[in-house]
Length: 252
Length: 352
Ligand SMILES: Nc1ncnc2c1ncn2[C@@H]1O[C@H](COP(=O)(O)OP(=O)(O)OP(=O)(O)O)[C@@H](O)[C@H]1O
Ligand SMILES: [Mg+2]
Image 1 (cartoon, each protein chain N blue to C red):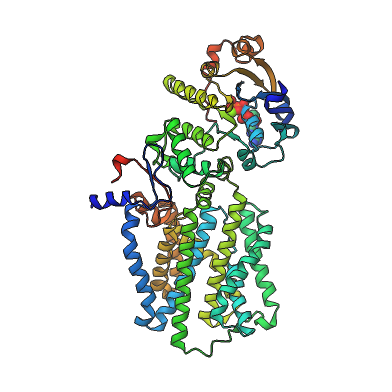
Image 2 (image 1 turned 120 degrees about the vertical axis):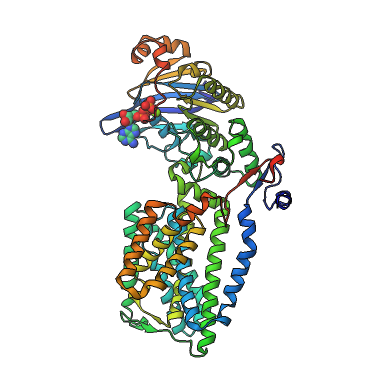
């Protein structure tokens, strides 16, 4: 098992003052796997992505990609080695069109030149359903399109490890289904996916494995249905799976 | 008209060949930019011919216009794209002026010294960038200002360079005043055109797109693989070269170099003003801003304090009314003279 691990967290700890966002977290993600992450608001899920992507420094512990430590690398270096995140609150380049947003990712993160970058951009825009918005200045997009743009930009970087942070939050059921099929398609191409989501329905239908975080610690880990059935997980979500489903997509 | 646009769509200037993705094309120009090419060339030709048409005080005024234009354009790329809000570009303006002075004192023709002075400022900007790039936001602004003050203090310690009172620029006695005026004017025009062309080509390139992403959200830009530090340093060096060249022209046009003048913080205020009223983060903005500033200055300069009050008022009104400046208003109507963007054109709608 260990040989095919793409990502490995080794006793990662991080706190903001008195708030503990990671408390000796250790777990691995296999190459090609889709891992779902659930947990209550403030559990430290987004912070975890920050530490993997390089936006946040770990206090102690190590994060390794294919056995190589990431912790001393800049965000841009990690992107170029294949670790790419989306943002829970979309951060489009608001003065640039959708096409330009994705193109800059294909050129910089994907390291593609000239027409190769253009082709990747057009493919990704098509795949994420943004083709009709290609020339729209991204500051004018609605929430759904902004979330798609987050995914498109990340895909244009040519990720090996894709970190999705609540990309389904606030979407209607058909929109969630579309998103699920996009993620499945990406995973089918061999991209390893970590997916934070409050919309548990989307996760259960997509992921191979689920972890539950609370207060920066791993509460449960395993098959989605098993994890959600655990009493400690149920207790965290104050009841049944239904309550989990209606948790907000959350613009803080 | 439609027919013409269709043909232009087919003969696209884009470096990208038609994509394999369903024959889609990428267009870099816009209709307004294509229509603007001929008038722009005419304006350039008229500007180049100006010394034959007007007396020297007109060309002298235009030299000041070009100096401010260069400063505005470089500051716009610095602050508007790279997020480097410097109030110390006068460090390089002064360094450029004093480089020309020093080279002239060593016997070099001041006009020939211009490119040397500009490159020298680019070289000086490297160690300065190590220093000021450690600072963020407001500290960066203050830091760059401090650097300019240090440059001024170091310069006035040299009595050979005229100390605090300044000194005349030697080496121009060989020119008759009219020829010198025309040559200075053409040098200033050339520097302005090169700065504009340089900024335009830079912003259209990969680096330019990355910088535009940094302009909008530098953190997210890093998250798609952009290394902002590298791009910012390039911009800082280029801006120093532009300011240095402008400073060299300033020295030649004034025939005199004085530290309080060339290192003065009022230059920073001028650059910021022309960029903010014209439209920050656009190439056209500083051009419009410089024109407006010059009209205000020429018509109101005799009214003393009223001039300053009005200039301040214009800045405040623009900030409130149109944060993207005068050019921001034009852009709402889809006008782009220097299109740096990309447009996806599907085969069936290539006349759009
Ligand atoms: N930069 C920061 N400085 C201080 N505190 C922070 C910072 N970022 C996050 N926190 C705090 O750390 C805790 C974990 O935040 P995080 O965003 O990781 O939670 P989350 O699990 O993603 O929550 P949600 O489900 O609401 O998105 C929160 O209490 C938050 O307020
Ligand atoms: Mg979160």
